[in-house]
Length: 461
Image (cartoon, rainbow, N blue to C red; front, side, top):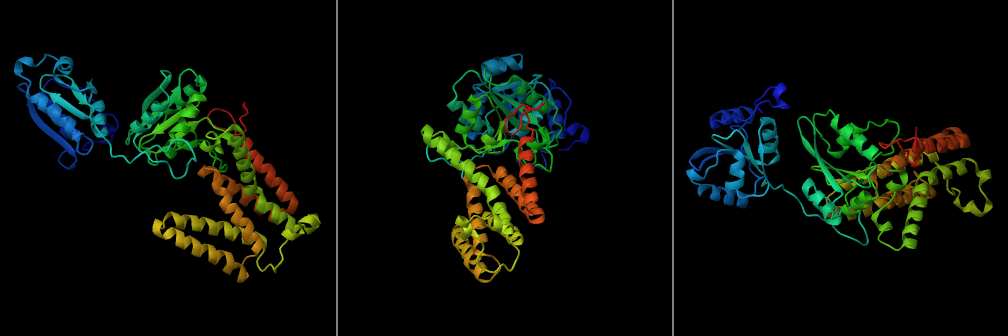
């Protein structure tokens, strides 16, 4: 913008009666001569000069064509004395409002709303006939369900609120729109059931959003999460649950939770949350009760194994006398050329390397390259003497088991806990293993979330 730092975030000034003054102000604020997508369209309506301001690509051409066509039929005698009368008699459209200050006008123009100035009116007419580029509401790749709906959130916040409103036709469903970021001015929707939400939690979230001082939500929901709740860097467990499924978000609303939707982000932030909420998924509810309970128990046990399997194996290999004879087959048979702890650490890094490579590999090549990488790391690395077969087996289980729970942040938090437990066990034997287990429970139990509850869902003072 052609404006200094003092007026960039807050643009002072009210709409004038004279069109020339309003046009001059808009030309000073907006870079109309530099930005090709900022359009100024001048015309006459009922014998009065008028000027449209909008962004090319955000406006529905057919709707604007019909609106302008109706304006050409307005006669001078039909023009009301004020802007309110113009809305009621001359503007055949639904989503319209009057704006009196330039701060709101510029914000609306940059958001895609068409703003109209008419000579003699001390108000700006805002016509919300915008449309945003959006992809289809396909089922998210990460959070799939064997049954249930196949739609998912997209990057357009209005579409996301509509997906939830379609499921909850309840007058108590409230969706408050807030604006975050001095420069980005990103739309953030606070969604809750008015008759079920914890009012103290809702007030806490509202206060944090109102007092949030950010220049821009550069990374969408992650920037918002770090702004409203600054977590301790040494505790990797996530404090928020994210979902890309509107049915999951609607179910959480019925449980009294608060949902935060950020424009340009295809996921919903759920507050408050606990460790049990983190490991839940939609499949737990789309099956009969006994099946859902079995899936939950299986996921919990597998999650625990991903943390404790390799450290327990390392502890037993350091204390062979503890290994019962019935489990003697788990012991390492071949020569250990590289200490077990370094084998585990190298494989942990290698698995992350393969994961990152898969993200940047074209889809048509990902399958053959994964097969080649599996053969090389599996058979050839064991035959070369770098790794033992038992170590490869347990790390393969850990790598696959990480995908049994849908939360990406929780998966890496568990990985860090496993690495800490491996290092402490290698350094201090059984004492280090015991200390590591205690630290893990401390990380989980004392991880205080936004609602004042820990991951174990116990109220903290």
